Image (cartoon, rainbow, N blue to C red; front, side):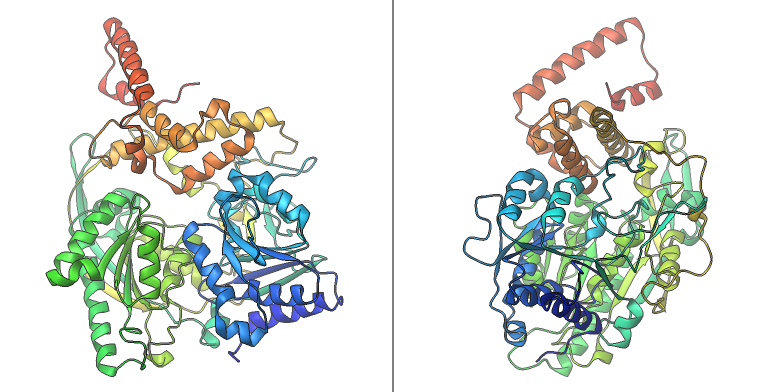
Length: 627
């Protein structure tokens, strides 16, 4: 029988107690460090509860379509079917009648539930379900009627999944992190009420009806469940032209200060990125050569050699990275060994599956599809060429390389190497991983995803990257970090109340929530327009608020003014994870868009006949949302 890790043993014990009616627990929270092995937990708990007759079916909700197959595989694994003595099978279901189709459960996505919440709720009312929610931190808490809330209630999928949580016979909530980048509470989790002036909610580890299981990086490393991480921080220079066509430069990314954003944007698209790609590719190739010389287990030809995952900042840059990587490979091997998985490619899911399950491709370039939840133990190297610096996101990204590969030899011979730009924000992330085990929700004075909305042309001008060069590379092994649930040493500045974010009590009426959601969607659309204009991310076609609104309407199949509350939340969730510029092709042949564009163009001409706006005013007028 395969050995269970400590958190898996604990969940098995909780499930056995529930099955034997020895406890009133019906909610299990598993906070498992990324790569620690949480995909087995629904199998363990589902097998015990179904055998005891407490549930009829299992529903497993994942954040992305690419993870549905991995969930199916967890229940189909023959080793664990024999070890746990279960015959449960789940299917990846679409939003159709009878999602189980004769099996014992189904796997779906947040998006699918939001698209047809009543369909899933009816299924839960017909049968007793164990509901497993993967990566729960994606779901912000929903304010209950009569309780305190904030004016920034901007849930995407939470309201659609909340009725399923309420209707389930038992719940297994899993996440690699118990904090969100925006500091908000997470859906359904038990928090202590904030006390005093501190606006920080701590998870209540003694909440009645709950069993909370933690598995920290320190525990996982001690049990050799994950690999230690070696960070390769690369420093470099960068120069660019600002909006006034003045040359700006920094002599080191690590000392860029207030220019970090522009310097990082330049570095990820010029010579620095190529140098970092080359170093990561060279290191992975040497590692593969050593592993090949050492030999691989019989029956697994080509397995256990190591692979390289490249995380790019956007799809256009990802394509450039792929061309660069293929240029370093022999012509006959390039297309086979290096591939790309981005949302605009129809074969993206197949490419990700091949990267996971086959010896080739050995190099995968992606933007966000392959960073979270990707179970590919063969990954030994990650080139983190992205501008995102939130802790949950980066933790998931580096965890792609920390899984132990059963085909790669002894534990001590395996590697997890992360190459990244040596900027102060990434260094701060490393420090947080080493010192903090996040179990709190707090209101931060400035949230990462709100930065674009606060920008002005004067403060954040558009830039034209000129050049960048890598100057230094240093390696460091990240410390194990604290055990689960331990408070961080000292108090973070985000713990303190802020005049910019005062506490607001009261209840929002539906019309106010709808109005706020429409405003938030408009802000995000406008922000993407500004970013794409400033950064020249759209090579062809118009970049305007009207154009991007038309694309969003086509993607959502409905205008914002006609959307229901749940549809507005689904649209907001879509925008949080997609770039509108990647979907401009949807309106290429849209006659309604062409007609409305001509009408707006005539209106703009009438305005300019009276007063010709300045270049800067015109820039603002292009992206300003209309009521």
